[in-house]
Image (tube, rainbow, N blue to C red; front, side):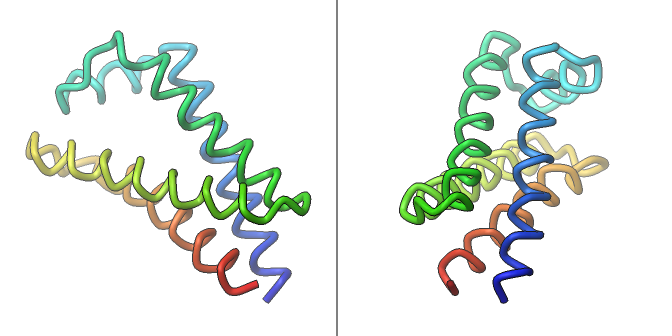
Amino acid sequence: MFAAYVAVTVVTILATAGIAVADVARAGFVLANSAEVGVPQAWLPMLAVLKGAGAAGLLLGLLGIRFVGVAAAVGLVLFFAGALFAHVRARVFHNIAFPGGYFALAAASLVLVLGR
């Protein structure tokens, strides 16, 4: 179980940190997606900070500060649930797998950290 927790959480950290960097860099696909679902570009820096904080919190959880890891996983689950809601509200389903994948990783990290 510990190996699964570490593996899933590391993948979640890397994926979340990667998309946070894409937000900061204002990657073309990020700008296009945010426009399509109605998220103002001015929100991207704060969204990147939230994602980065979640990734950092998961890392701290791996390093032994369990309550921070749990809080980060809960925060990321809620964050990506909001992203899924934004896609559904805007009826943008062609790329809903992306926030769905991040949501699934965050949820799996949460389940595994709580199971430790």
